[in-house]
Length: 173
Image (cartoon, rainbow, N blue to C red; front, top):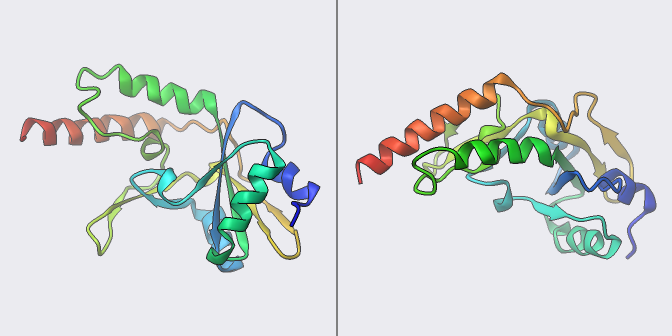
């Protein structure tokens, strides 16, 4: 199995200023929903996505190893400058490193919710969803709202809220 050049270019256009993640899903309906509403995750993107680097063998490996999760691959991409901006703000907090905050928890526009397993679920902004592709037909669907530089005023509010919650938890320990 070799990866189609079109897919490689869609996934990783050779821009080293991006963090790129992929997530497999079983249906196009779900892929469209993620593209339109954002990507739900528990705690960290690393729990349900794979980081992609600009290497065809690396890409081929992750596409093959995750194929049993579905035929549609969601592509999540954000500029490292956005990520590192919020990482630095986290590190400036006097309670760092006692607080547990993942940068991607901040990059949400929806209020987190608690699921049936009592996990806090975050929704990464739809602006970081580049689109998706069908692994069989190689058809790519581009998200017209994709903006890897997206930075919402809500993100700073999220940071303040999460740090306050974490600080309160640490104070009770």
